Image (cartoon, rainbow, N blue to C red; front, side, top):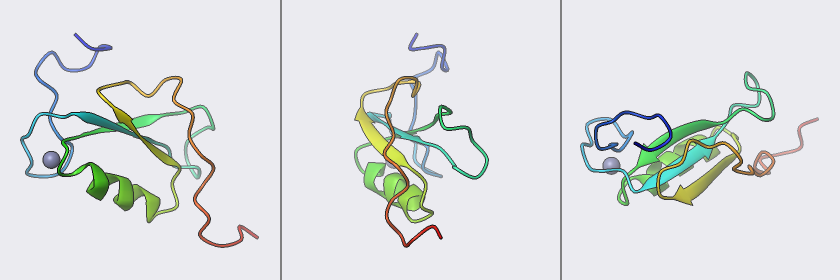
Length: 86
Ligand SMILES: [Zn+2]
């Protein structure tokens, strides 16, 4: 199976969505995660934008990757420009 994730067909992370995941939304929370830490939400094509925007709206670094990955080695951008951190 893929990178140690569930042996079942991975599904979208959106609540109430049971569609097969086709994308990985890789992100981290700069407040609690080290710079090399990666969290991954899986998403179907319909919800990948929703999930990415959800994270981006919280100023989390986020990147969408085609396919299913565990996030390791995915370069995240710096936090979106949502104002001067100072
Ligand atoms: Zn979905």
